[in-house]
Structures are given as structure tokens and as C-alpha cells.
Length: 177
Image (cartoon, rainbow, N blue to C red; front, side):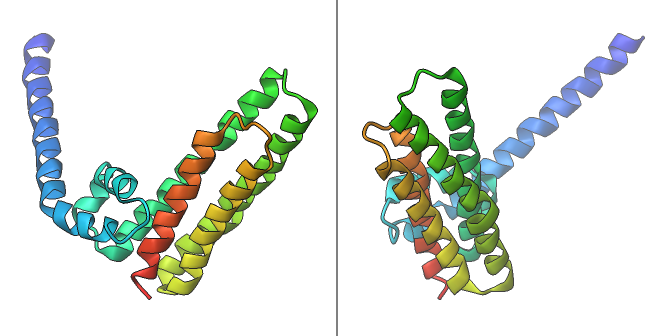
């Protein structure tokens, strides 16, 4: 008896889930021209478009909402790079200069997580867009400085990603000024 009740419930839940995904993709598709228009005004159009359209919140977002999504992405990517740096340090085998640069990057990215991202997010929530732009710009600078500290960086692609995403976020926030 349990099996016969479970199967209809399972089918209903699966149908509901599929319907919700279809609904989200339709909404995202309807907002694609708006997102594309915004992304064309940033320094990394393709990255902006890919990043924003992969987030379901972009389906109904205005410019401020798109900026919030990008600041969230700065945070996500910063957490990822910090995790990678910690893996590299635990693994060992790095020369003293690279080890020192990795430790410096931890400081830089902790500043992004504890200072720049919260500053940008709070400023976006309060409508103080100049401070939001500054937070995103500062995050891009931290990523650039991190990369410049290496002779040969083991995290170049991740540094570039945080740098570029931060510049996209700053560009979108600038549209609100």
C-alpha cells in the first residue's frame, strides 16, 4: 500500500519541480534583453551575461538587483579562491616566495570578504551607490595586487575571475549613480 501512495506523490513532486524549472527559464529568457543591455555597458560583456543569466534572480531583477547578484558572485568566488589557496599551502612544496605571496593573498581576500563585500552589499541596500561602487572596485584591486605578488602564480585564473567579476559589479553599480 505504501508503494502505491508513494509513487503518485513522487510523480506529483517531480512534475511540480519540472514545472518550476520551466517557469524560471521562461522568466529568465524574457529578461535576457535587459540583462544583455546592462552587460554591454561593462568591461566583460560575456562574463557578465553568463554570470547573471545563470542566477535565477536575474529573471526579475532591475539594475540594483543585478548589482546585488554580482556582489554575491564576488563573495562566492572569493570563498573559492581562499579555499584553493589553503589547499596549496597545506599541500606544501611551494618555494618561499610563492608561499609568502599566497599568505599575502589570504590577507587580501579576507579583506574582500570582511570589508569590501559587506560594504558593497550594505551600500546597495541603503541606496548609497558610491560606497557600493567603491567596495566592488576595492575587491578588484585586492585581486590584482594578489596576482602581482607572484613571479609565477598558481592561481592566475581565479585572480582574474575575481578581478573581472568585481569590475563588472562596479560597472553595474555605476549605472545607478
